Each structure stands twice: as structure tokens, then as C-alpha cells.
Amino acid sequence: MNDSLEDRVRAVEDKLAIFHLIASHPPAADTGTDRYYRDAFAADGEMDLGGGKGARGNATIGALVKTPEHQAAIAGGLCHFAGLPRVEVDGDSAVAISYLQIITPDRQAAPREVPGHGSTTGFRIHRVGANRWELRRGKDGWKVVRQSRNPALPGKVGEVIMAAR
Amino acid sequence: MNDSLEDRVRAVEDKLAIFHLIASHPPAADTGTDRYYRDAFAADGEMDLGGGKGARGNATIGALVKTPEHQAAIAGGLCHFAGLPRVEVDGDSAVAISYLQIITPDRQAAPREVPGHGSTTGFRIHRVGANRWELRRGKDGWKVVRQSRNPALPGKVGEVIMAAR
Amino acid sequence: MNDSLEDRVRAVEDKLAIFHLIASHPPAADTGTDRYYRDAFAADGEMDLGGGKGARGNATIGALVKTPEHQAAIAGGLCHFAGLPRVEVDGDSAVAISYLQIITPDRQAAPREVPGHGSTTGFRIHRVGANRWELRRGKDGWKVVRQSRNPALPGKVGEVIMAAR
Image 1 (cartoon, chains in turn blue, green, red):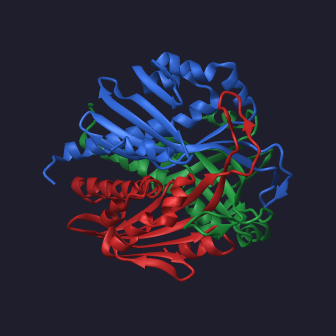
Image 2 (tube, chains in turn blue, red, cyan):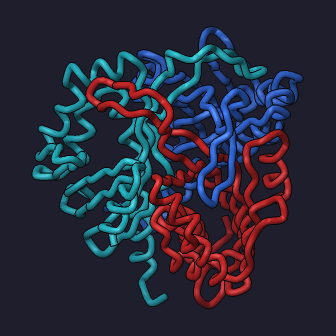
């Protein structure tokens, strides 16, 4: 290790800053907090939702969680669940792969009981897949330049991961 | 950055200490290890399970996993699954938002096979939602002062997250 | 704290290096990247899959994701989902407990729509449980010496966790 102690501390801080940015996504999505997206994305940042769908610009991306559709999803019980991300920092750029589940209450199943844990009709994984985040460090810290997501459908998870290399 | 290198290292250690505390919860819950709760919670720490249910005091909270109900849940196959937490430290206080799934074997479904991954009847998400942890640093390190959890039911996830701000 | 600042930085780097190794597993498993296993495991590292099944040697372990069975699972939509790990480092050895879900598309369910989040037939948790990783630091960094996994079946999760103590 030839890096200075300060460089090493900064490398650790960078990783944790990107963890924080990814960990802050589910609470923002599940509460419709557009400010998160405006802060986390670069002004010209992109969100690629696949199939030609997406949005460009941090304000436009933030506005997505204020749409009636997203608000209806929240009202129905919406839960974004983020796994442990893989983050690789290279100077002022970084690429992260994170897995994400979108979970909703299962309203069609019969209730079941787990001892000491109450009775529920359970929850349903509506989507799961890998997200790729491209980030850049600027004067205001790390910002998302591009986020792509691919569902766990045949060949899809790999697409976004392979592109991350 | 005007913080000293030592302050910056301490900030990183604080984050990872709280990650560790949250990551240690599922193994303790799934094995009925009351010692975890006694160590992790402050002597007068509170667990708010929602709906007016909860417990106060680290010994009382720890005792919950020794009840016949919890032991029966473990015997039936119990899996707590923690996502990536969002941790904000402010001096000697911290607030963390972590998502948690409670998963059990699905005993009613027909077995299905995944090539190279055997045949199972699958697993069922019994509960999922956001936990809010309020922590305080004392002479024995970080301790949980209050834990609240809200299931991913309409409006519930947001309740606990909004309260964390 | 009597450790030098450099020791403290190294302790933090160690934790994050092991996080990275665990976070890199799902992308490798879901894309059939054998190189990950060759790099992550020690030359004589072991993978204990339970029930007397397993593999020894980093090349042999890596080859598992190149088998027709694993490739068929990927082609069918395969998603490994890792939770927040609990990592304990002791000098040049470490033990980690991480939870892992193996998720596949549910092809038998009827499609359901979530407002603003499209329509899917949902996903199914095929396996979930706790993994125990034993690691050792060598001249090439942290390597997995032994990985054991236990599904969330009655008594099974606890087996691997208890053994980690």
C-alpha cells in the first residue's frame, strides 16, 4: 500500500457515501420524496428503466414519484428493498451494481400465521433485478450520472451487470 | 473537509459499528439469542412493534426470543433478512432506517425445480417493512434507544421513515 | 482506543474488502462468471452446499457456474440477492454471516399490475438462508477458505450461524 493514510480514508469515505446514496433510494421511493432524486442525480443525470422508457434530468426524475401512478402505488403499500451493493471507485468516477426488490402486499392470498409473528396474507415480489449506477464526483459530492435497471428475466440481469465492467 | 483525519476515521467507524449492530439482528432473531438484544439495546431501550405492542428494557426485549411462540417460529423455519441500512450519525446520536423481511418456508405450494438449484416448495414473505433505529453512543459504544417497525402496508412504511427525519 | 490510526483504517478497509467480496457474488452467480470464484476463493477453498454436496478448490468451484445446469438456470432468469452481512475480523482471519435469497420468475401466477410499476407474474423465492464465510488474509488479500450455506428450513439457519461463533 503506497497510498497515504488520507487517501485511504478518502477511499473508504467514497464507498460509504455511495452506499448511503443507494440506501437512501428505497425510503425516498416509498414515501414519494422527490428531493432525494434532485439531490442524488446530476442535473443532466439519466434513469434508464429499460424498454425505451426512462427520464433525463434530476428534476424530471424526481417528479416521477409525484405522479398519480406512483402515489397510488404508495397508497397500496409499496416497499423497495435494496441488497448489499458492489461499488467500484476509480478516481472521480464510480460504478455500482445493486440489487433491488419491489414488494407489495399480496391481497389475494389467504392469511397465514407464524407463531409470535401474527397473521398476514403475505407479500409479493413484483420486480427484482440488478441496478447499475454510474456516478461522478463533483464539487457537491457524488452524483448519479446514469442509472439502469434490468429485471430478473431471462438474460436481463446479466445485461446490466456485463455493461458495468 | 475541515475535520481531522482522526475525526473522519471515527465517523467511518461509527457507521460500520451501526451496520454491524443491524447485521447482527437477523442471526440473533433466527437462533433465539437473547444476549444480542441485551448487548445491543440500552438498559431502558424500547422496541415499538406497532399497534400498541412493544417492550421496554434490554432484558425484557431479549426475553421475547425465548418465548415458546418465538421458539416455535424458529422450529418452523424462520429467516430475518436485512437490507442495506441508511445511517445518519450526528455526534453521539444516530438514526438508521433499515428494511427487514421475515421469511418462512411455504408449506402449501407444490415443489418446483430450478436447474442446478434443486427442488423446493419456495418461501413466503410474511412481513416486510422499514425499521427505524434510534441510537446513542455511551461508554460501552452504540446502543439502541428505540426501535420502531412498520410493515409495508398502505401508508405504514412512510410513517416510520418520515418520523426519522 | 489504543490502536494507531493506521490500524484503525486497516480494520475499516478489511471490513469493506469482505463486504465487496460478498457483494460480488450475486453478479458473478447470475452471469456465470467463473473468474469471480477463482479470485475470491483460496486455491484449496471449500464450498459446502449441505447434504454432503460441495466442491473443493477455486477452479472447481468456479466451474460450477459453467455447467449446463447453472447456465439453464441463468437462461430461465436467476437472481441471487444478498443482504447486509455481519463480518468479524480477527487479525488475518475473518468470519462473515450473510443471508442470501435465490429468486426466479414465477411463471405459473397470473399477471398483476402495480400502478406506475407495470404488470408482472411476480417472482418466487426458491431458496433463502444464511451463508457462513471463513476467510483468511494472504499476500493477495482476503480469500474464502470455506463457505457453508444452510437454507431457512427448520433448525437449519441456526446451524450455520451457531457454528460461526
